[in-house]
Length: 119
Image (cartoon, rainbow, N blue to C red; front, side, top):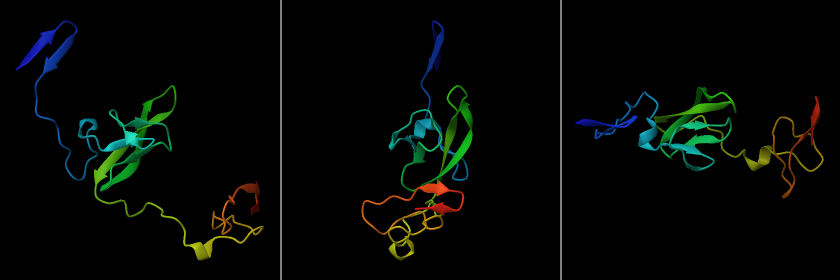
């Protein structure tokens, strides 16, 4: 039973649960923003993720002023998520790391110097 409460409508309802091939509903609390629970499944690009056991995909713009997009979390492990690259594929110190995107030397970071070289 629902009651009108001024401008708001308060209802007691069973929580929705998404089918396995659908994005989880925000109230299922599977979306994360900056590693923390995200109650609206709307995050800036690169800041959204999902709980373990869910696959992340970026949805449509949900907050135009900042360019935030919906976080879609579907049941199932994310098999496409890149893990850390194998250490033997990382570039040696001073070498071009444009393709490997990582450096073997501890404390080194790969960054783009120009169109043809990253070191």
